[in-house]
Length: 492
Image (cartoon, rainbow, N blue to C red; front, side, top):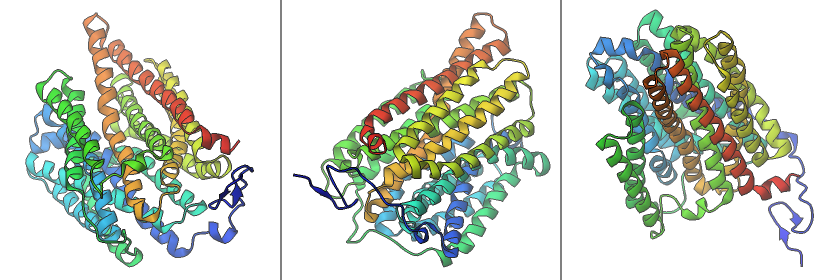
């Protein structure tokens, strides 16, 4: 006997024909656009912070008295809390108010950026960067859950997520361009001052536009879950960030990896035994959630990694200045914007699952083209063209993985769902670079020990990293296609 699918209004044995939504359901009002602008501006600001200081590190280090080996901590101090605290604050936003957490994060981010801009020694700079990371871990999940609860599932949410995803990808590349330009023109402090000014502007407009939303019922935070997942993520991020600079043989790296693994296992154990878990394991059993998160994690980690490796190629092999290499990434960022415009149309026609698989494949295949780089000028054009096409496909995956994960999730759980979405994003951005950087560096050192020239050794390491990048993406695309096979068939 056929059963009725009330969500679609079709019988289980008949084809699923979803009528297109009326035109009014697809349009955004003026207020909707203003809300979207505020939420996306906050996400863009956080994305800028991931990369805007990178090219300024040598200048900043000389000014504040950093030892060269300690410069990485200006990046790691931000990455640790921004990746490690996302799930915690995503759940806190669900329980105690998304608007309240979002506004608190904006104020904290603005203050932290001002502290970093005024830093007088390494400790004050690192304190500002760490507070920026904590604030980012508040802003991103709270902002994403406000976005998904403001814009209903369907064309409006697809459009909102496409704009947000495009600006996040663009922010990472624009940050490198702005970092080079501002540091050359006004000094490294101007990069942090820009973030403080941006935070102040967003904070000024947000309160009047955003309305409060939270989970109904009396909230209770899962403390054991919060402690174990936060400690586990922090330990793993620390280990991989340190290993990228010093290798995996150090005692602190090994200890952090073991501690992280133990804490993550304890987290799973704790979540299975509490009535109000931080992460309901039943949600992770949804195939759309688990496979969507895997796709997003691969897309973000591998895109940030290939951009990092391409930066090394442009500056260390081709001898380009930070400003010129930043301009190359500016063009790649424009391709990301184009991908963000096209992605919602693909989702509407082919579905989120197919678009996710296609995005991972396009990103992976064009990343594999970068194996052909050499010491000639042709390598620069390869980075520009293949990198742009890879980033174009990357936005297909960025938009569709968020839709895949959040589709069908009730509003009361949207903070958790978007916390998982943004965790994949932020953890991917944080972990991808150290992983492939360590792989690339080990290959470079091996070739150097075998007598290869410095440029040949560096190229060998970069090619290995880019090859691994492509293999990961194509493999994950295949896994997601298998895991979401029913979604792919539904659109056939």
